[in-house]
Image (cartoon, rainbow, N blue to C red; front, side, top):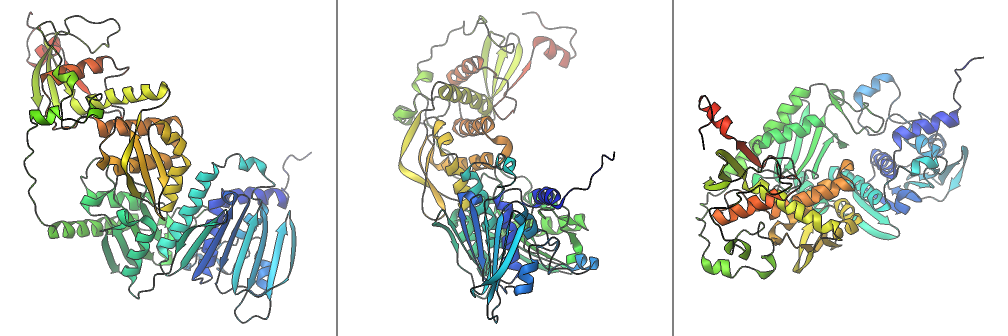
Length: 592
């Protein structure tokens, strides 16, 4: 009896649909691309149940006649190609004729369309494999209504994220389409409420329209001051908006690459972007919106069914073009910037120490402009740390004698005849991390209300992602609320973290954790707390004295793992007596 069987159409269609329709956002992407291919200048989206209950996309494109409407839900039926050779000359998004067919395999679909000069519209409906069609009212353009997504493959629903997360992904699809098509109007209603509206930009100047649309999508904070790049070479045109060196956010989530208006994820392009920035401030990432227009035969968009990845025929050439253009724009902007001399830092006076904010005195390692009472009251003697406490870590080898600071970044101790060096920022970061983590494990982090909320401008998709995790953020001390069309108000921050000017940077860092699927749950908590500790800790080049040095050493001794900061960077370096002797080619350690 044969064991190989031919699958029925019902089975293989649902399997194929899984490659194209992973979630509501991938469904929306296919429908928007169809609308753009039809020449639409207006695209309206309506969402219920985060796209799982229903999703409607209406456009004012060229529409279809009755024959095309009947064919549109059939497998591999397309208007984009007719022969294999056409794959090397693609000027459209969809071309394989599988999107609507795949969507209909896992949902209930109704397509209604009419051409501008037609006397009647036409409608086709697919439900459970049964297809019906007939006349419909004349509405110029096409409307695709999808409901009950994955109703016949319920196991797929179990892999969906929360409704808030799915809405964020849906919003991101519209934002990407809006960035690449400034002349198209996009609107989106979710649960009956309008959440997005991008009016067409039609000034007549592409870069003016491009810049205005970027500001509408990203918000003024991120889009303000972006550098324009517009270069045309044989076979390629590059138009970009990128951050100057001094205006980079603390998140890598604001980078958008498009090839022939198709949003793509390209390691080649992203690496080229970062190469252009060279040595940048730690934790800083450029904003980038890049539109690349290439000859259709210069890249392959058929690498993956979702068409998110592309393969360039000349990877090295694309790398050099993008990297070189961005580097040139940055150099030009840097040359035009006025040269200013930073004022010499003023020494911390006794009055400043005594007038330090009361709420901050509990967090002696988070202070930047004061020395807390714990440090001032610390009494030292020649017997400091003479004994090893029970349970002390292996690196703790007293007695310690403080020698001094190197470059106001490293604390140098003599330790039992050897040499012991602390990175003051990494060590303080570890102490604050474990203190903050302990507060959370004991029932929640201490939070402080801000007298004036801190506004943070973000793309709507990022706002939704943050609000979806609002309860989790509250447990680590943050309170956030939606504000305006594109933004958040941070109304409370962790008590350890009281530098309000750093709040925007911190929110950007948290967004990176939220957008990373690996960083869910425990990882998100670790990343967020590590970031808070990093921002609150003393920094390199902060001047610390002998008392602070001993206090930091004792606090690090009590940590579960004092050898590294929460991000994994080394916090200490030790050379014992024998190692010092070996380095100086002595036969043995000098007797104590």
